[in-house]
Length: 332
Image (tube, rainbow, N blue to C red; front, side, top):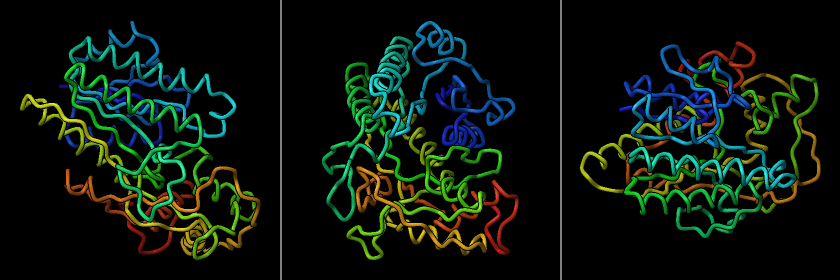
């Protein structure tokens, strides 16, 4: 069978393609290349350029590649932009998902993995965020992810599709330099961009109710995240082969909080640069602490993150600058 990976030319998507292809899965990528890069798709993996909003295009791809499973990562994801353009985000992220699910159901696809986000939780006032923590997203982007989960589960129940909604926490690092995160929306690219310009990294607020006053987040290496997709896809395969239907909702994180200041200090250790930060005003809507409980995915699938935060920083810095400290893990 073939797995269709939407958004497979993007940062996270290309790592999922790499993990699944190297594990022997047959994959095909759908990407409109609005944010992706065709060079990220490995040789031998078909790339179909198009959008999930195009039903005729999807019908052709599903038929020609004999697709029986889908990993859906294609989405707009800039929180600030979603506030400014909510109608655009709902159209791209929710309507696009609806079109894809209808095409999948009509084509007899019975396995569907949905890229969700920890943004569905909003500002949870809990020590560890479990999958049962109430969801209250703070942005249209987060709303589209939560709405997407509802849609995926409803379609799964109605059409006998085994589904998994994966709630990613903060993704960082790279498996190989050519798959590195080239955006500037995540913490490490933002810090590196400032350092490369000879400017101090910024911390948005140091007066939060945390040990060092800066926000605490759960970071997961993108290679670990990609492997989680492979494990989930194979579980849905087993369910389909057994004639069962499953509905999984899983956090994907390390279950360990790291503060923004701690991240920046580690960047200084890895790079040898002066990383004395500039403290600026808080960003609206930033919760003080969001850390995953990773117990369910471990108990359900035996998955556990392998890489730590230093691995993430080292791999990302090497990808951008071609060098790293002695002794850094070569496979990070």
